[in-house]
Length: 233
Ligand SMILES: C[S@@+](CC[C@H](N)C(=O)[O-])C[C@H]1O[C@@H](n2cnc3c(N)ncnc32)[C@H](O)[C@@H]1O
Image (cartoon, rainbow, N blue to C red; front, side):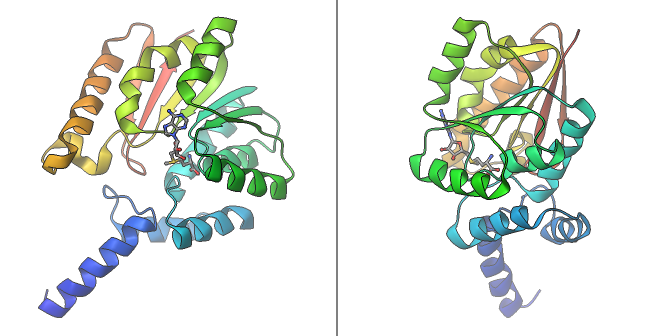
């Protein structure tokens, strides 16, 4: 690669980071699959909004995987931690034809407002909660509430503190999915020094998850790495 090419590569790399490209799936493959996989116009509109406004959303390939789980599982009650601007929420709802009740939580007021607008456009209903997920989770546990499907897409370094709580909130045969568990591949090898704490917390989280009885844990290298927890019946 010549110097000119290298510069272009670096520029496009930075742009890609804000286009929510994964570091574990090469961008050309993410592009190819993204073009292959048909999806609703509203989802494409959110992808464009995210890219233009530098807002993180789930990668389209990971969203597709989530949709397949939802269509197969047909959960009645869904909990989402990390609404963002509603991309994953609406991906699930489109897959479920709006038939499930989704509760989605985020503590970023600006994003919740944007999510509200996109959700309104879809015509679906979502129980959107603007609060810290830890409050919401504690309240649900106190009420004895449980879900068939839980999608966690908040801060990677927080997963370790949510871990056993999420298991408690899962019904028998329920499924929980955590995004970003491979953290650009950093949990598998070398990582920049500034991410030492996050990588350590994520690795400890993954170790704990494997040791927790009554669950099957799988890591799937889609998006930025999805952890799938299945609660045995
Ligand atoms: C990657 S974004 C979510 C993207 C979203 N799932 C989508 O695909 O559109 C992560 C979100 O988690 C939220 N978040 C992180 N920690 C949280 C917490 N403790 N409570 C509530 N929201 C949290 C952030 O505000 C952010 O909007």
